[in-house]
Image 1 (tube, rainbow over the protein chains, first blue to last red):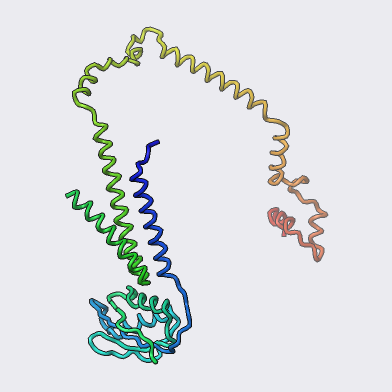
Image 2 (image 1 turned 90 degrees about the vertical axis):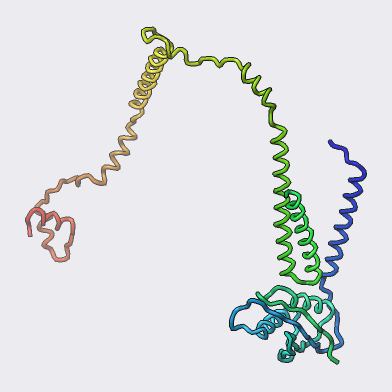
Length: 129
Length: 174
């Protein structure tokens, strides 16, 4: 049996430690922990752009489709129609308001690749008083 | 060129892994899946490259010095002529003919034994079984002729034997 050098053992242990820390950090970052929220509604502003999409599909339709999908993940409704602010920006209101975990999940969903030829990002997501 | 390929593979693996973790951290599952697929492809490519490189090294190690191979070929002992007996004169009773005749006698003996055993195994039970099987297609025990009583009985109202009527039709009776 081949003898292992101490340096290799040390490097292996360091790599193992980094891997364990990484997995634990990722677990913490993706864990759902819900808590009560004071606000009832939230304002959402997103930026969207499309390239090479199907003919007859407008950017507003694609934004609506993606937001409708994402709000199902966080069980919050679109409490106001989606209005265009120009320059690819769109605004709407979510009700009820989202807690910290749901906000991360909703931001991730909006920025994810759900609909072909559409790229979206959250510009603003804040409580409405 | 090989170095560039290896660097491209390793770079793709690292970048794909990095973006996969970032996407997971941002809760962007589809992006994470996509980058995970990139990582998998790069990993398979690199693993295949490593295996091929190791095989190439083994092949190089197993190559024999051509001078040594030449010496071994020249000093190879002559192969024994295993079929020399086929070239002997046909007038001699050699091993080949002996083998044919001996084999024929043995096979004939085996065939005779099989024939004797088979002839003794046809038992009365087999004949009885055959008789039962033939019973289904045998003639009726009384023959095919109808007596007068049976013919007259068909005139009685309510009597309707289809087989008897069929026999009467064959014999020309109404």
